[in-house]
Image (cartoon, rainbow, N blue to C red; front, side, top):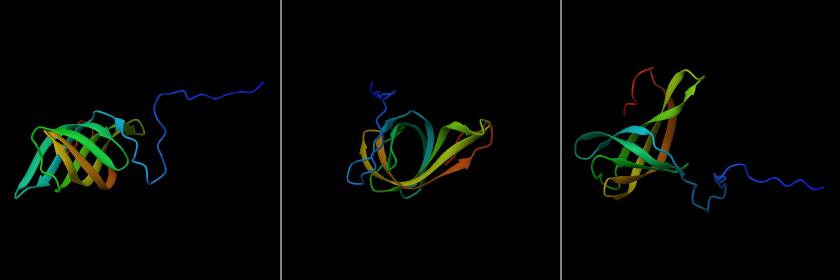
Length: 121
């Protein structure tokens, strides 16, 4: 008798092939952003989806394309189940439609966030 293994989840496996676009996962997380548009503009929003190369989020206002932006995303998993984390993303806005913005990830790192504090850009 031959055993056949079927996927246990409907989540697609990430592709390793660089020619293929990165798999994007729908995830809604609170974030703060900041960018310079002649002055330092700060705001809040919520992610729509994320991949290894891109974050799509909704801002309160329409944001310009081609600008550097820093995102501070409240990560849902805690370090050692106790310490809140922030995903700090440095990127560039590559597309915008209304208040939905696509950011190309240029650099990222996880930072420790003091308990009870929101992510800050």
